[in-house]
Image 1 (tube, helix red, strand yellow):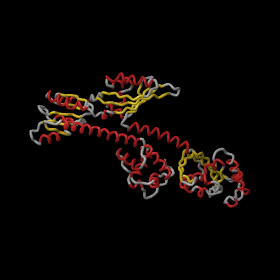
Image 2 (tube, rainbow, N blue to C red):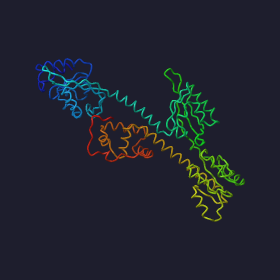
Image 3 (tube, rainbow, N blue to C red):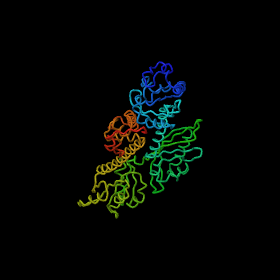
Image 4 (spheres, rainbow, N blue to C red):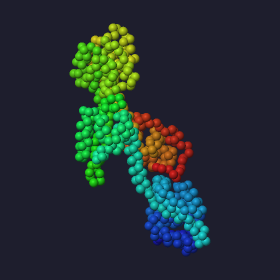
Length: 491
């Protein structure tokens, strides 16, 4: 830069030939040229630019035209940011900014760039401020790396907090549970502080599965990753839930496995082959079991509706077949299950005697279907299959909803804003105006959104967002009437 500076036609600039420069300006140039830090001197009322090699490397396509050019003409896209700073420095202040965002056009397109900068006044021989010295370091790469790390950690935190699955971390040496995600409270129905260590966790596992769970922890401590299903018994209501847990080791820096993690999924709704038969008459119970068992159903028999209701909250999902003949409680079972919101669909069997009111009463009580006696075996099997299919459909809808919510929760706040803008029909340009971002930055966020959602097209992304219950941004937010420009935008 020293050679280029000497060869430059300074006579064509307000500074005039180098030989006429004041000694203060020459001394400033002698200071900045050999510096290893990017430096630029802005001299005179027009803030004419003189810079070193480090600053040249930051200018991109604006060099060499920027040498000897008024800084306002060189960097018009950030004049609204810089002018207030220059005014303060010209008044005698020294200012420092860390990781300050500048939307610059230095490579032919607008891009978001971060700098750490120092602005200080330059004085001439009379002590009057005659220019501004700017020392700066571009921190774009570091800022983006820090933001990416922070965003990754934040995304994990949001995923863990909103996921329907339970994420857990345990110290295998102290046997302490270091982390339990909020979903634990919904699945186990216990506050996290009630399970401070692994032994307390094992205490919530069904007694028949406890040894298997303990052995799984021992295996993961030896470096094995495994998937295991076990049951838990909730202390709040005695309900039994089936859990599919992925155990994985977490090696330390020295290679030893001191910690383990896991993702526990409630798969109780995955099973759809259980039928609960309620019949007071021995012959009716035997007949129903004879029809259902050959079809592969797992049968549990009750001699009264109350016996079933007493433990209904702890039953695995399935269909109830209720024979109301000789039943004193009649339609109590479907009524109570409906009132308690226990998802056990009921098929009612009974002799109507030609009274259409029988079926109406059954359906009003909450039954999903009813069959008149004598019934055909095929009709019974069809009614049970339909009821169980609805259970599986509900479970699948719930899984899809939870998966969509987990994906949305994994987005950063900025990515969510971009997605809301896309749902409202915004383009990269209009969304950028609304969020004070360059279209290129919106495009980058949009790509991250599509990747996080696992969507190939915008239509797929919209379907996922809709499944999660996400609402689009208002049209005013997507397409603002007045563009918003701010030097403090955060990408």
